[in-house]
Length: 117
Image (cartoon, rainbow, N blue to C red; front, top):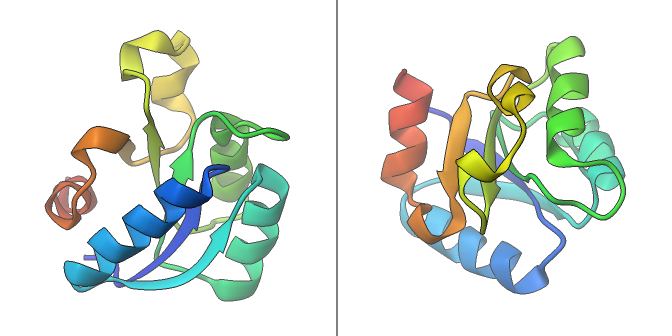
């Protein structure tokens, strides 16, 4: 199970809520970023086990960030969004992410289930 997490989301309120939820479930949040570019730099610097990554970011979208992290041999990525996974194009499933969790369903248990898959 991943122990360290980087949260990448452009909404500060979600980052705060996700941090509290994941820390309560035993994860250690090592950083937060508001854009895809910041997230890529933070992932390289902090080397988290997992990146919780919003699909819709203001600069580089989460799907492209996931592709870049995968090419770098980076951490496991779990995509998240307030939208449903079916709202995204077909390449969503093949970008290198471990999976997708809707923001409303985020939990340590959901992340652990994807990590074990």
